[in-house]
Image (cartoon, rainbow, N blue to C red; front, side, top):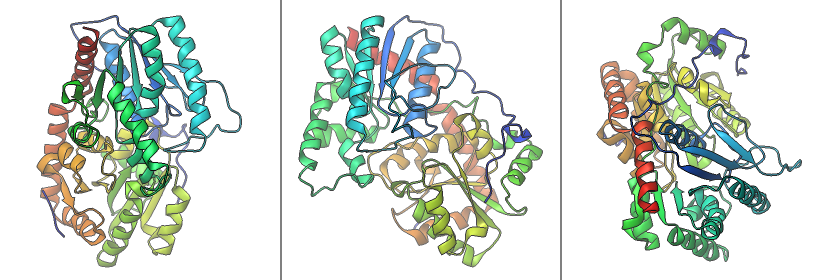
Length: 426
């Protein structure tokens, strides 16, 4: 459907934190004993986007019997279910670095050293590099040990650097980074993309052969992200109260990184427009690292009483936090990155408003309420449409849940990745 139109988190001792652990994927009939080295050039696990893909992909592959080891930066939190080998500690850089950073070069060197030691010890049969840096680090390892390199592509590296304001398209450095990205794309033995749009981009903009590109869409575990109508009203009410949300308000939720390329400023500006027309709406922005920035923006727009910023929400608790919402929003403006949060919204059964990007169209199909990119007024009107039409909102939520279960399961995604492994090994 296209429409043109402050309080801290509760403590872990609180009852609202009593959520079930992440549900495992079903054990498939066929199994494998492949040894796979995954390279994650990021402070894994960080409770957002690409980390969720790495984690869920690993769990799914392990359910088939694959032995997964993830090599990552020194920072990040350990998470049950996956084996993580970390690079050497860097005391002055222990925070979570999101996107491009001046720390990346030496962190990648340290990660490369850890990956080499792990490869010597474990002798993996597949090197699986996430993001361009992971593929770049994995390339010499794969060639040295004569094993295939599988590149997990989640968006254009240079486009992401532009999105994060780390690089300008007119900069003299843009061309060298583009050539490096092109080199990595062409040297990988196979490329897994998180969207079909990403596969098209690799062929169209980088001249890659379509024969080595395999779209494996982002997915969701429906046993973990249960529909909100199966969560008791008492449980949702407790969490709303713990977050200090006034009763009697419709909740518009967002869960993801708080950043400009995610459209967070657009969301608050749309909220300001909507709140001039009706005051029974509350916006809950869940995520990090820009809480203070957007808290100040909400105050400047005079909507702070109708906005709650929770800060970082552990991935294990994301289903519970999403279940309190009535409507979900993802105003992401990036043209190349995936958008895995949409799958979580869908599985929980939240009617969803997005900007009209290729990735949003691919994931939501005709069940998403999409508006022109950057159009704040249309974004506000789309949210208002779903708030005012409860029957439409309920119908879309149920159909989105069904679409997530039928088309976007990690169980099926794991089988697709194993098929890619089999192809490159043969």
